[in-house]
Image (cartoon, rainbow, N blue to C red):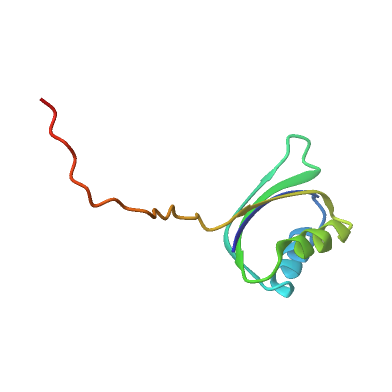
Length: 97
């Protein structure tokens, strides 16, 4: 399962490391990461692309418990379902004319 997370966390020493530690302990692997300091310099806006086999709701709950984390938003990408066609007709189409 692929998960995209957007976090806002206070820009404190070790805050990002604590977030990444919880991600690892909950069985997710970081595929991509971007972090930007806000205009005031007191918070980081972090975007994570994660991959894992576990349920992502538990990860979100654990991240919300960290005192550094102000907000967590999560988006999951489920595998696309392919359309399966049944009842194929083998009748030839009539020629227009």
